[in-house]
Length: 72
Image 1 (cartoon, rainbow, N blue to C red):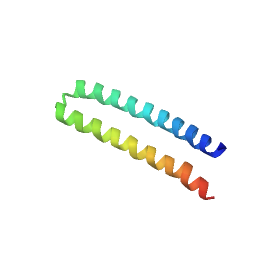
Image 2: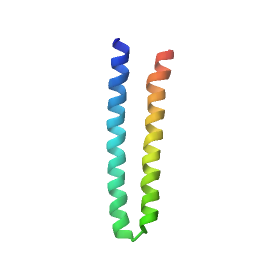
Image 3: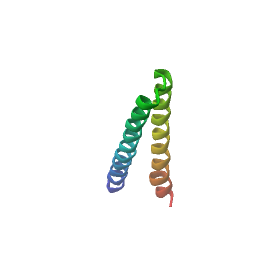
């Protein structure tokens, strides 16, 4: 029971940190989109790429922190 709580807390903290960093990068991309004059379709593609990179980063972190740590 203690290990599942540890995994849940680790997942929640990882999700919060990666989500916050992703959100900050999206805000920066919005600022540059406004000032640089990029098109809407390119802006949406950038946002999708940022969210995908955030999701992949979360998956890698959870794999390294939970699965590999439990195998040791």
